[in-house]
Length: 469
Image 1 (cartoon, rainbow, N blue to C red):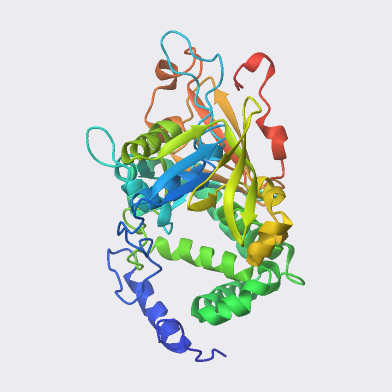
Image 2: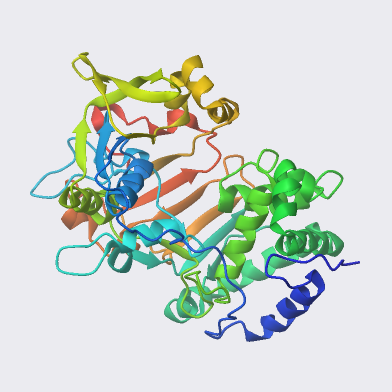
């Protein structure tokens, strides 16, 4: 029985469910329902209120660069202190010694870049990074992924190639309508239907609808305190329900563990990904016709995004101090009066500013939370209770180009929850002519969403030779 709890928009749950059912008949058009809106990225427009006040930002990764952009556009004076590399873990890492014959080095990446259509903040930031010759990073370098290859980890399931939009279906009709792929699709569909009982599928959908129609107070007050695994009541359900619906989907799409991620977080992201594909939410980029629910960069990350970003910020007046890391904060009268720094040469110094922003990984920040700092800002104690995990990646440089439809590859249900992408096609590049020594013609970039492989994945072969298969 569905109750009539009122949602944030003022509609009852019953009314919203009826509207959702009616809206399904409109999927496939560019129709947008004005009342179905999500949070907007540009909540606080730049107003120039900074008045030149000094802000010290510690960390030049993606977070630090984003902070610098928001502050410099609001009139603050910004200095970014970065101990190693601008871009942090989002940067490109060229393979040392791999360039030859006038080519560029093989482009190393920390896994591929995935920008769902429901993401707003990063694409909004990209849209404000201008490029030489006109345009911006979002419009010139963020492209749609046209297909998906899904493989399930169990006998009887066959890999399936599926379109992510009508455009993708039209562009790759040959591969999708291939007899082997159609047979695999039928086999896998029947296997799923046989392994996951119909009543469990219905229950899973009903739980997503509960998230969709809960008010914000309930989402934060109740679902934030319950794990996704408990919320969808995985215990006692079929093995396929637990393996694929609960665990595999969560790890592949949200990059989180269902027993640790909250029902609010995982449920809301799942809903956002699904609704992005319909075109019914005006702020989301995706539509069932043109795609956009799954977007990637069309070039190595530094070339497409990080380097133009840093250049833009420098042009706006952001100062970058490299080889410097914060080692502690001096506190007096309940306020930070300086940040102690250490450099590459070991020389210590102190940085002073009007405001201080720690845009660094948790493992670097936690040791800096000394008692005097926590006494001045007790809320920071919560940082010590955060649990963090790492997602790592591995790349295979291949001696021939893949003929797979440009797709995200998801190995659902595998122990490492692997997802991958062949990069030559979406980059529209002849690898052998542009990168390396001419022997590499494609790159398979693989993410391990739950950090299972840890740092062992990033080890290079002897003598820095690129991996080939």
